[in-house]
Structures are given as C-alpha cells and as structure tokens.
Image (cartoon, rainbow, N blue to C red; front, side):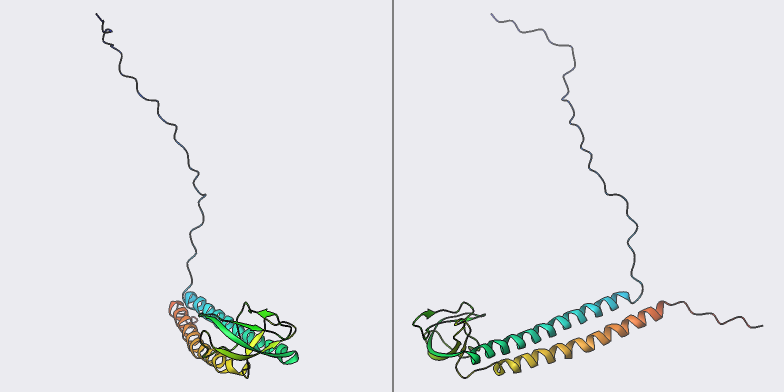
Length: 187
C-alpha cells in the first residue's frame, strides 16, 4: 500500500522572471531640417544635370574607344575568315584562325557585328599585336556614329528643357514664399 504525501499548504512556486534586456535608444537628434521653398526643384535639376553629363561622358568615351580600336587594327592589319558561333544581346561570339595558325575566340566578340547570324562565315580584320581586337571587314567606327549622335541629341533635347523647367519652378516657389518687403516709412 502506497501512501500519498500530505497536501502542501504552500502556494505554488512561480517561475523566476527573465531579466529584461535594455535596448540602447539612439540619442535624440535635432529635428530634421526642412528644405527651403524651391530647394527640392533645384536639387532635382542638379540630379538631371548630373545624369545628362554622365551620359555625355559615356558617349564620348565610347566614341574614343571605338576610334582607338580602329587605329590599332589599321596600324597592325591582319585579315581572316571567321565563323559566328554565338549571338547574344551584348556580343557576337566568333572564331577565326590568325596568320600564325592559332584559333582565336575574342572574349569581347567582334566589333560592328550588325546583321550576322550563327554559322555565317565572313571576313574580319584584326590587330596582329592583339588578335582579340577584331572587326567585320569593311566596317569602322563610323558605323556607330549615327547611334552615338542620336543618343547625344536625345540626352540634350530631354535634359535641357527639364533643367530649365525645374530651375524656373525653383525660382517661382522661392519667390512665393518670400515675405513681402515693406516700403520704407515715409516722413
């Protein structure tokens, strides 16, 4: 026979509370400075101007790079028959055998590849100093001049009026918020 222990008169034990973690709060900072009237438009105009300048610099760099590649090919001219092995949005992969009998697959593809298709054979011109600089025979940097000019023109035609509009809005907003100047007291 088993005997049950006598009922306890003590209250049930409470679990020990977990210590609270104190999360450091950031120090109070000064209230955020509000923009003066028209300052947002001026900032937007500067952003548009920066983007337009970046586009113009990129177009100029591309034009210079195309001319330098052409100069390198013209200075150390070699020709070969190439085969298109792949076409993607960013490059056209080709393969050709240079004058030394080495098979070349330029990692950057071919310059000015318009209207080529996979498996097509065509003539290329390459630099004998660096056979990875290759262009389609008969094509030069002049092929890209029209696209560069259009890009430059669209950039200027879109950015100039937008900058003008934003500066004008900036001046108007600032003028609207200016307190009226009281005339000097008359005697």
